[in-house]
Structure formats: C-alpha cells, structure tokens
Image (cartoon, rainbow, N blue to C red; front, side, top):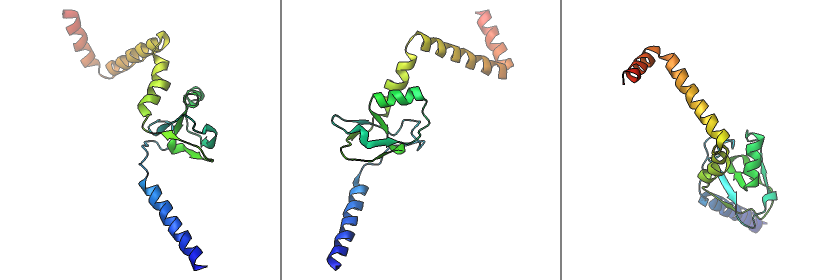
Length: 140
C-alpha cells in the first residue's frame, strides 16, 4: 500500500516537473480577444479535442480564426488526445485575420475616414493650434 502512495507522489512530482518545464504562453487580455496567445494547429493535430470558451471575438473574426486553425491558448482547453500546436504565431494571426480585412478598397476608405475624423476631432479640441496650422498652410 505504501508503494502505491509513493508512486502517486512520484507521479505527481513528475507531472509537476513536466508542467513547470513547459514554455510560458504569452497572454495579455487572458480572454482570447487580443490574440496575443494565439497558437496554430500543426498538421495531424486533432482540432476536435480543443474547446474555446467565450473569447469576445466578433462572429466573423471567430470564424476566420477557426478556419485558419488558430487557437487562443488562454481561453481554450484540451478535452482529448492528439492536439499539437505551434506557438508564437500572434503576428501571423493578426495578418491573416485583421490585415486581410482592411487591404481592399472598402478597408482603405474606412481607414481614410477614420484618420480624417481623428484629425478633425483633435483640431476641434485645440482650435488655436488648428488655426495656426491652417494659416501656415495658406501662407505657403
């Protein structure tokens, strides 16, 4: 009976040693919506063995993340075997999920409108600075 207890203690120590040897996973929001913690399923990874909790992503973004095989490690957990993930892909997920959405004519128009609105709001908050800038522009 003592041998079984020793095995459990040693097994737990081995498990804890293994877990502490794993790399720290990046995370900022701890909910999955910043995508800092993104990992990607590697070939032959069992995607059905990962469940993602509510991560706050818009449905269209959630769909893109799933289609590309990305996983938010801070808001997901493994429920079966065969999961193999590649870490450190947050830049890739941003390029694949966000940048592709704004690199067309509609996205470009939205960017220009957002910049114009931001500049207008900044100028409205500081009219004297705006007036000086406008006078310099007109004098040129």
